[in-house]
Length: 418
Image (cartoon, rainbow, N blue to C red; front, top):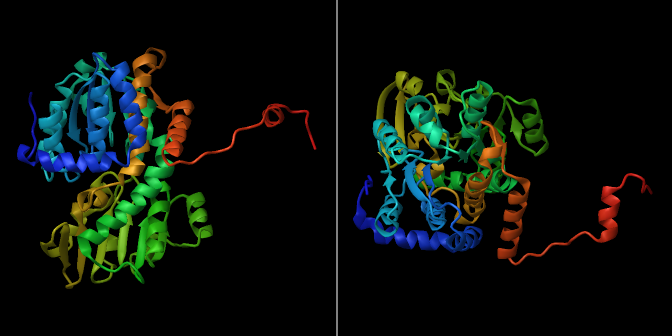
């Protein structure tokens, strides 16, 4: 079995880490138990490009229990937990290609290694696996029945492919499931981003001006967590509806041009490129801290920051100091990559339980329904979404009401007025 991980001797550490995560992932454990009996993915190869973390380990183990052959690589060069990668290789015989801190060439080499497995189902986190398959390995597309995508950024890219007629097989937008984005994006990103910033800097959040760029579900979660820690939160947006919502939620809203002059912390969560640019860096305060929790590091104009700097050094792990010509310093966290995974451990297991339950059940859905789907981006079926919510509530010991026959009749009729 081919693999490329940092050190297999770390396996025992990874084992404990995965066991700890499993304690907060009851929904996926329930699915794993059923999959191990029914084996719905027997004979299928799953090629996955995901963050190699404890939670992902639970997902790929679940897929293997379902009978699939799974090949896994990292969807971000900084997010890999090396001990977890070693554990999956040594204990579960899953080919993993991921090393924390790998360079860009190695990153794409690892994607190629996954594609060499000849996937029938793809699982992506940012669409790099799918785009590489469509550009460099078109000969493999005929064997793929479908795929799934975990992130907002990836869904945007895949919808663009579909609109241009470039997408060759159906993709389930796991990111758009309510049990994913309402929880993972909001509570997961919110908590883990603050965790990453604090671990990297050990700076006080309370009393600081904290600029959040983008008020989607990730931005909403981050803004609330920063506010909860005492920050003065500022929102920058390009969408008038999102900006209005942020205003009604009690946050200050202004253009980045204005926010750049007063911010102490900056974090981008937009999914777009060049959110923080040269003109913004030139007006930032001495000591401004810049981070990203959107999927790719393109949100921060790192090249322009380098151009206007006379010195650059790593001052502490995951913190790079850029000294501008006038002597001011700007601090970039986690190389501009996902700070919650680069400088911390990513989302809590309890929230990834629902996200990865969607991934597992979407793979099963594709197994039985892909022949009915044309190449396009599809939502997670509503019954899967609601079933995951039901299972999560049951695991938390929470019960809810059901409609009475009278209530069902009222909701389905049009002639029962006041």
